[in-house]
Amino acid sequence: MLLSYCTNVHPAEDLDGVLDQLARTAGPVREAAGLKTLGVGLWLPAALAHRLDRSPEDRERLRRVLAEHRLVVHTLNAFPYGGFHDEVVKHAVYSPTWAERARLNYVLACARVLADLLPEGVDGSISTLPLAWRAPWTPADDDEATRAFATLSRGLRDLADRTGRTVRVAVEPEPGCVLDTVDDVVAWLAARTATDLPAERRIDPELVGVCLDTCHLAVSFADPAAAVARITDAGLRVVKVQASAALHVDDPADPGAREAVARFAETRYLHQVRERGADGAVAGADDLPEALAGRLPAHGPWRVHFHVPLHHAPAAPLAATTDVLRAAVAAVAAAPHGDRAHLDVETYTWSVLPADVRPDGPAELVAGIAAELRWARDHLGGGAAEPSTTPLNARSVA
Image (cartoon, rainbow, N blue to C red; front, side, top):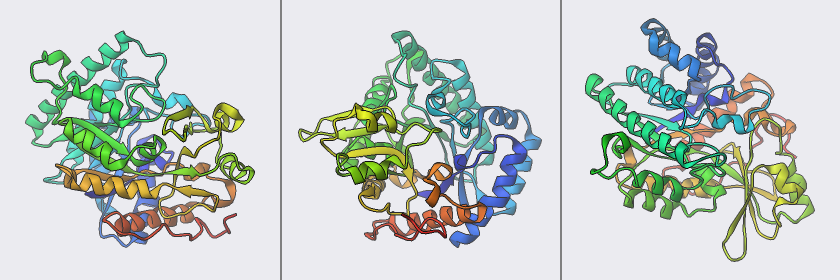
């Protein structure tokens, strides 16, 4: 699998800002991680994606900076449309939906840009949202989304025919969305891949597949190997794995555990929570403050959608779900086409970690991302070592 780190951790949304973050952060991360070259999973906000799509000169500026710092691009994150570092993001990250033309236009622009940036002989991948947040979502919306993905399939096929470069789009299930789980995304895509469907309603499984975010997978309490088997048994492929870990709370009724997890409640991002009951049933809350306020009974363990840096083990009584991450990567690697899946470290939450463990400036962020990449390189090929308990920064971890 090709390894990269996702640049949606950085706030820049214009070309100059992105070029600066590549020079000031991604380049130093490569050096700190001890890598000859570093994959960067670029996040291109919609306005920048459309600008780069229109401008060969701007793409050449980007290409020069990438080459200067020995960075390569084989995957893009096209889930957030823009404003991913606004003061409050929450549900805005799911807009526009796949029922709106702007979403299709954005992803197609990203595909054209990526095709022009790909190293020779390497296929590209783009992750995208699972249609929309679950409500409001109507049958008419679903029909529009179906047609949009069919149009996307034809656009990706035309791109491959014109350029000789294949770019695949990967739908990323997320708790609370229309396609909440792996089962949901498999059912939705598989129903639209039959060869006898009309072109305006058929999705090409060779070009549209699944993005397995291992934090989301853990939050849903899914079995990683079974989830990957469902994808491949349906004739679909795991195009991309977003290497990420969720927070695990074994006993959310314990006052100490509640106090510990409450430190991760913050105002920018949505942190969905799922609780598994004794019977295996999974209940949910749409955000961590709702769960803490009693939305969940706290009779069974919680998983919290908060991307924990991969190399870090939270202090007890909390834990991170890196066991799910390792199992998922192993299952994908053993699956058809698994060796061609892309592995993108996606810890976008560095800036909203509890204050006493948050990176204290750019140098500590570089060190943290580099540590994640070293951990991924060392432990996602079947290694059994646990995440390091080294503090995330120079200060002590409570």
